[in-house]
Image (cartoon, rainbow, N blue to C red; front, side):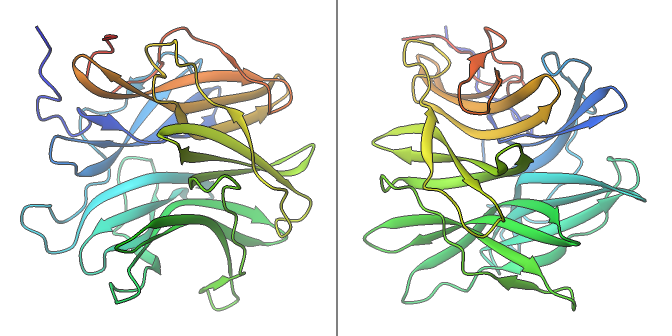
Length: 309
C-alpha cells in the first residue's frame, strides 16, 4: 500500500533547487524543503562526492517567523543562494507569505548553522489592479567590483501568468538598481531559476522553463552580463525514466577542471503522488549532459516513493 506522505517532516514533501558550495574537499548543499502545509524552510546537507548526501541536522537552519494558517508575515524561505565571506557565509533567498507577498532577503552566518535575522533586499509591489508581482530565485554574481542580482519576476493576472529573468546591480548606497534586462522563454513558457557562471563562453546562464505541461532546462550566453543570446533547450528530461516523467528543472552547475556538473530537480507523478528529487548530470561543454547516477542523489525525507504507474 502507498507509503505515508511526508509524516510532517519539514522537508518531507518536496525539496527545492539546491545551491552547492565546494568547501575543503567536500560539498555543502543549501536547499529548501516543504512539509504537508506547503511551508518552505532551508536546511543544509554535506557530501564528499556530490552523490551521497547527509543532512547536517534533522531540523531546518532557516525557519520563517509565520505560518500559512496564522499569517502574520513570511511563511516560506525558498531558492537559496550562498557564498563565502571573510566572516563565514552569506545567503540570499526568496521569502513568501503576506505583508509583503514576496521579497528577496539575505542572511549571514559564521558557521552555516546559526544565522542572523533576514535583511530585506528587494520587495515586490503590493497586489493591485495590475495583478500580482513576485520576486523569486535570487542568484548573485560578483563581477567588476560589484554584485549583480539575477532573479525571476512573476506577474499574475486574472487571465495569464508570465515570468522573466531580470538583473539588478548594487549601487554605491547599497540599494539595488534595475538594469532593465528581461530574459524570456522564446517558446512562451514560464522561465525561472537562473544559474549564472563565468565560463569559457564568457558568462553562461542556465535556467528552467515550464511549457506544454513539462519542465525543461535552457541555456543562454553573454559576453558582459548585459547582452544575452536567446535561451535554447538543452535538457528536456527522459519521459521513459520514472524520475523524469514531467521533466527536469532547477539547475545548479559547478564548473571545474573535469568539466561541468549539474544537480537539478526532477519531476514525476507516480502511483503514490507527486515526486520531486535531485539528480546529477555531467557535461564537457555545458550543453550535452549525461546522467551520472542512475537514481536521484537527494530526496525529501521521507518523501514520496518513486513508483511508476
